[in-house]
Figure 1 (cartoon, each protein chain N blue to C red):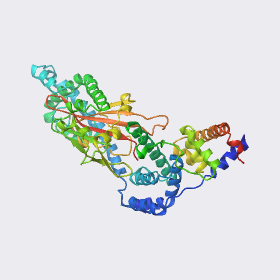
Figure 2 (spheres, helix red, strand yellow):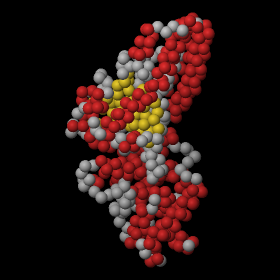
Figure 3 (cartoon, rainbow over the protein chains, first blue to last red):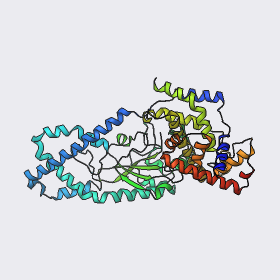
Figure 4 (cartoon, rainbow over the protein chains, first blue to last red):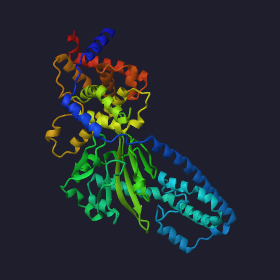
Length: 318
Length: 174
């Protein structure tokens, strides 16, 4: 058997070496030299980590204030007026508020950027003891509202997103259009780095977008760098196959995970959004390299209704 | 040496190796676009390159990802295409020996047998056997432990021999 194995190995070594055509090789080299280098910078990663650590400190400080507030002003927290009830209802299931107080821990949107913002203000919080009681009241009320609603929020955003997955799978764009933000429309991004010039359809265009034969520039292919010039139907076929997300391995709400090397800037583009990610960890055949995600990005209006503002794909990139 | 110079140097040194690997991995000589994609990805992902690693193994690792990603996209496009007989995609499977024409008939048979192996066997046979990568390099490219590389390569060779014997090909080799 050893001899046969050796003979097989010898045969394997006899496969001829293939070489690129020299002119083609030169073309590729020229293209390469013109391309952008080093999309990811270690400095940025470091900054993210630092912000995360400061974020933890900030959350701890805020919790301390809430506890202090409860002790000092117990009356403030026993008030349950009709106004508050109404306010809670108005704020909607996810209860993010139109302009969230940066000092308030917001369970509905614990994304890194917002955490960063609250971090930046953590020192102010420590110094501003004069307004402590008022702030504590607000914090506790809001925290209380968040607690009330957190238990309900995930099924709702998830239910809506499941509906979006089914609608996209069936190419039922009328259903999708019903939930698109009336002013912001619906943005499509093939990767988690949302480009400034990403394609956005108005709400009233979404229902019939797949009827269009016009090609759009949806961004650039990762790696190749060539433009993704496709009709909406072709873009959907290539980037919005919902099959992997019918039975996802994970569903994450407002939990930005950096999976590949592409910078995820969804929260920068949509700071007041809720992001739900459907993640499929890929197949055994391709040893998980073919993992992929779809992110549905929602924003709330003043009544708390969730509107879809973006559909963002994520997949393996270097 | 700046990043651009480093990538340029890597391209000079390894682009043909990457090309050769992709030819055998994809079963076609039409992989120049993938070579370009590999080096562009490498250029953009330089910050994730561990400088104690070998550039060649890193590039092969990217090439394998690119090849798999490409095969997956192509399979998806074939699946979703309402006109499956379009020129671009006629009959070409994600992995198939259709495009490689080897003058040596025995090698052609051997290659066809390799492409019928399961993915992990095929990976290790192409890297260890055809590309002559050592165990450590193969382990880095595949993200396996060295022991797994050895074991899988051993099993893959057995599976390959069995397959060739069934086809009556191996016994005729000299």
